[in-house]
Length: 427
Image (cartoon, rainbow, N blue to C red; front, side, top):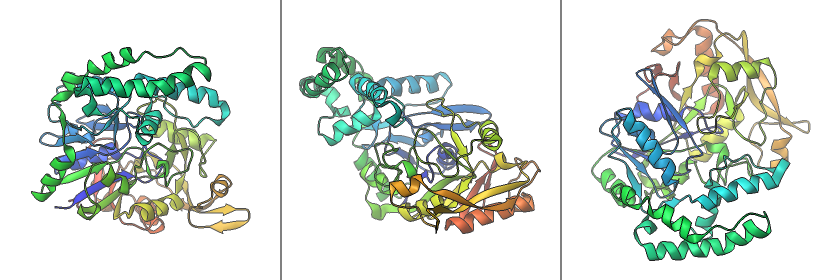
């Protein structure tokens, strides 16, 4: 059985957790392949809401093995707090596997993240301040601390000292902050070693062996396509690759083993943090989308910026990820509008543009070109087949499918696991 990738097709927060959870009962492994606890998934099971930040959504599915791959950056304190919170609610967390090659977020990464954002002022990126970017920077600079380093105190001490030789100079001389003692960091990290040891494994080997045995492996991306460090709205992006290619490097599974790439697409558009957003609304419609959709960050609690559906972005996601199909979420949020605008193109300096501009300056100046579709007033939360949707809701879905360039295989009509219309089978 080929592997599947499930990822965000916009700026994140599209509802990936629900989609992964729906598949969780049919797959053997669910793998987070990038990001850290700057991403969040909300999953509703039996009326119970679960907010996941670092853990794969598959941890809520009995019999499914959740995996944190080598491409993730891990804050051990956050990881254990999340595990403890789930265990207190009766969720079995013993199956979790963590790659020994995943990099660790340390207290000095968090300190640098926060002081750098404050220093940038109006030029800040809008990070969560959780140390994700500095941890990835250390990884690329070959100064990172990996999970496996926790089990060799001598190596751990050497690596922390080497990292702080440079960082303490920055903290003291640039930001007027107190230097951080290496011994304090080492002691804190070693305090996590024994508990983490039971979860650490060669996850790349395990996943490839699972695929050899025809097991079903689902790769779950954090954030979204437009936040990819290479293919997103740089520099207002995350520090990793949530696009489909990142699933390979972040897990150790080759691209020829991936047979399906599913993009999660919200029926409108949101984003958190700074950066361009052509369809953003600053009016009553924007406030209504935020209120009805509950558009507040799972991890940060920040208000999400809200806007109408952007087909240009959807088409870009199809191209960059090689998407085979879409899962459209939160269609129910649009109930009650008399007509619904859909962005079909941009206007940039008097030119009509139908593809995402590669130029950062052009994208900043892009203005949406809208087409208007008739809305619906009927409650759609009880619909379990496409034919049960109001005619105008059906027409909206079909228009989005045509404009986006990939078939829509499922539709979310409410937050619950069961509030989903499955048009074609995921597996």
